[in-house]
Image 1 (cartoon, rainbow over the protein chains, first blue to last red):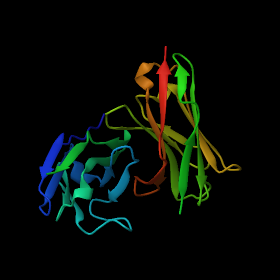
Image 2 (cartoon, rainbow over the protein chains, first blue to last red):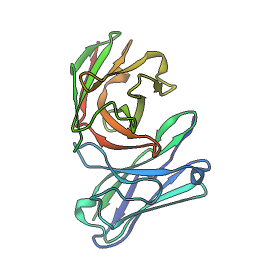
Image 3 (cartoon, rainbow over the protein chains, first blue to last red):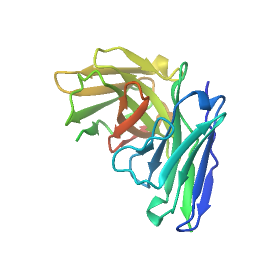
Length: 107
Length: 120
């Protein structure tokens, strides 16, 4: 089955840039999406189709995807961005696949 | 604005069938633009896609759960349902219903989630 691997945690200082990676076999050939999940809340889509932001998502969230790695970048990170982040892709056999998740801590 | 709301028992006995319903408001479940999905999250763990149903009734399931899962759509009530049979403690999780976007393969709207505990 298809698997997506993320680092368990990322720490960032307020105002700095946080980068979260998502690795999978030939992930660049698929579309990657990203979800933000705050404690006790449902996930929220923040990036889809590698680089697109849904309406209402701040411009500081951006994405890229190439080779075997997709990356979510949070520029000018704010305290409110502290959350778990999950990547997701679609595979022809497994269908929807989620990454292992990354906890972003804003120190 | 679409809203999804899960409902169902929060406690299920081992070996029985877990049944949940997701009521959709603010959008028609009969729209051909969306898939209607169930996703779960084990306590303190990541997200696991369970399966989806199209408004027509065609469904697709996670291969790891396929033998135990049924997802169905009721267009007259604008809701869809999940049945997971032969549950064990490993099925204890928060269950989310979500709307999947046809063609983009993403989930753009989620319910608040409901915790289902499997007891022995």
